[in-house]
Image (cartoon, rainbow, N blue to C red; front, side):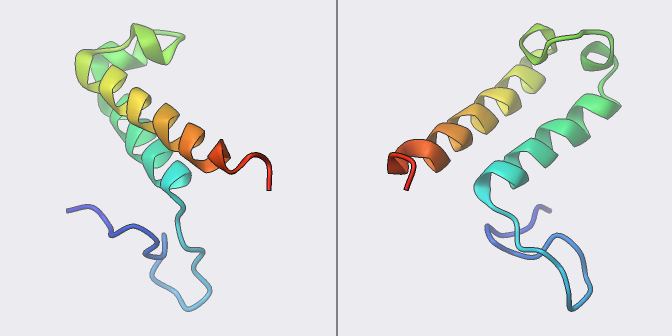
Length: 71
């Protein structure tokens, strides 16, 4: 089961809360390092269907983070 948005990454008192960008990247990264198809490619868009889906969600999180106009 995944962590809730903003829930700390670690279990200690000094844990850093995750942003949507870091959370979605971590989910893609964990998939990509275990998936045989995704391990063999050099670009995320060339991975398996699930890997491409997770990468797309990460990219959307990046856009959402930067939608504030640089403020």
